[in-house]
Amino acid sequence: MSRTNAEVSNQSAELVDYNLLSSHSALTDALVREGAAHEQAALTALGERLGRVTMFTLGDAANRNPPQLRAYDRSGARLDTIDFHPAWHELMRRLVAEGLHTGPWAQRHPGAHVARAAGYMMWAEVENGTQCPATMSYGAVPALVRHGETFAPWLRLLLSREYDAASAGALIGMGMTERQGGSDVRTNTTRARPVNGAGPGREYRLRGEKWFFSAPMCDAFLVLAQAAGGLSCFLVPRFQPDRSVNALRLLRLKDKLGNRSNASAEVEFDDALGLLVGEEGRGIPAILEMGVYTRLDNAIGSAGLMRQCVSQAIHHSRGRRAFGRLLSEQPLMRNVLADLALECEAAVMLTMRLARAFDAQEEEEATLLRRVLTPVVKYWVCKRAPAVCAEAMEVLGGNGYIEDWPIARRFRESPLNSIWEGSGNIMCLDVLRALTREPATLEALETLLEGAAGRDARYDRYRAALSADLGDASDSELRARDLTQRIALATQAALLLTHGPAPSCEAFLASRLAAGPPAAFGTLPLGVDCDALMARVLAP
Image (tube, rainbow, N blue to C red; front, side, top):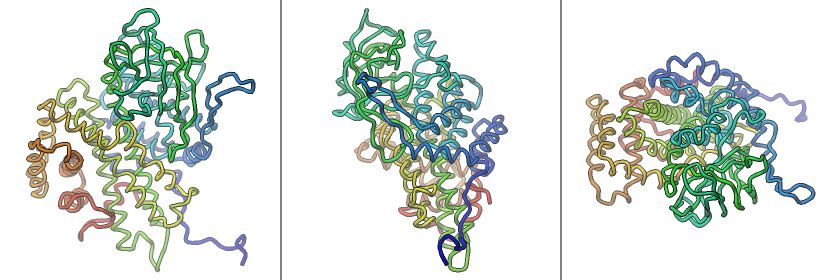
């Protein structure tokens, strides 16, 4: 029989046209628990819109047709523009219209950051390149708000829900790292000189290069450069006041492993106009104000990636037969899928708990928890994502490795959030700084963990050992990854003990606290309710 006439059987249906929220019990419960129950109806409607086949098709198209740099026109004049596929623009239009970029700042109300985290996590299941400019815009707002009326016109544009509509809205990119320093931005050599006097909000001219210029198609950028007073932060607009193109010379676009729908560039500043954000010499604190929020988004994005990949694996197993049974009925496959689902649920719980701390901006304890848990969660959730995506891809067999299928693109995407906005070592050292510079930070963490004390002997032993090691300052840098991982696991265990369903809690305590996270998924002990764990991530 020829291939064109052959009957195709034993194929799982495509996982599309389903509600990304109502099918995800772990996220639905977290939304209510962390203070955004009043947003559930709106987010359920959003989950329905995002789960449509149209959205997944747009995401695939945007990544199969990456942006192209047009540095010059046909006559040799500088253009420094980037052409994007229509799918990119449609995705951006929808993301901005949903308020997923700066919604919590435009409509401040209890639970706003938690609600956005849930919506943004669902968006991460669909497409991730669009999250780069959205995340930087989210983080730029609090960095600019600190400086009063100076940046009020920009703030109005950032809070708009219009995308590229006759300058009715704006998005922010970023330029920090240079070739010689990477994360060590104090070694930056880009220079800035004042035009008519120095000071906050005043005009400067920038000269130098950036090795990574994130989302170079944006309307403005937060850029670090050396001024007379030291390393400083500048808002560099794409256009000058007379609407001529600012002197941002795009040298080339990066050829990236993933995140291919989005542009990242190398750039040269040739006396580019920039406005000083804050005081000279205060560039790192200014940019870190933005970084706190972007690191939250890194974790949200990775949790969303994990959920989509694990959902694809579970869905495939429910529709594919092998050796006389559905894959979902095979004992070892059930163990693998349940283990993946458990990792996903724990990541969702941890990330959403962190988001709640961002809603309590004026509470001291929440501020302290935000300071230590942001690098903890960013490190751990982003670090776990590639392993989860890889294991989920293996469930689909050879098809999982093919770009026509849904996991390959997401697997290529999965390492990025761990690298972006501070790689693993930077996060773990930041955890140490948070715990040592302000003793109250450790007290806030201990209070959080103490809330689950006495509920399970395994947890009590784990928490006591962690507390002792956190009090030991010897060789702390050498042990920073171990301490950060254990804080993450202890916090996940505390959340599950306090709020999680019994099957998930028991499986986590038995598999994660006794000997740490598994080297490979599928090693859950006997007695685990595999169906209950899988149902937490994708309803049957």
